[in-house]
Length: 139
Image 1: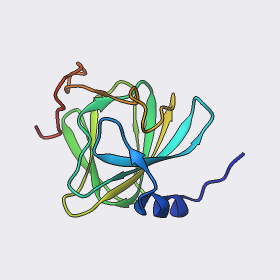
Image 2: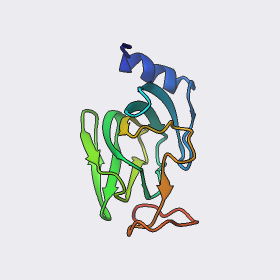
Image 3: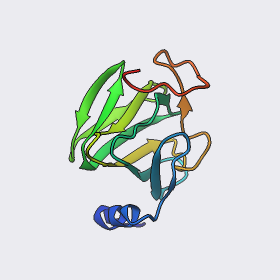
Image 4: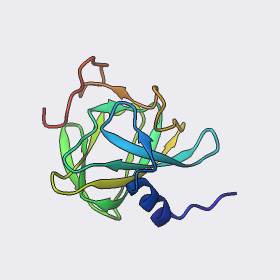
């Protein structure tokens, strides 16, 4: 068993103790995993956004700090600290940070893929078809 303090981990990530998230302008840190279920901490700088993408499994996203967005079905919703949302596997979605506020999230997924894994996410269009050039929410 391992207990993780999110405030401590968030401070470490904000101090630069993270790795680039493959396919997105963000940094992340692994928190916990048993090889199937896992949790990571993600930091998205102000004004940055993940392209439209899918994951091989379901995941929960919990906003810890900042203001951001989640876009699903080409609709964008504001996300603030304390908001928790579930994204079903293989559903195209995008995550972003407000232009004036960075965004810190806990991402819990099954199956778990490390933040620096090439197969963590697949860039797609809103119909779920793989793309060579990233599609951004609102684009």
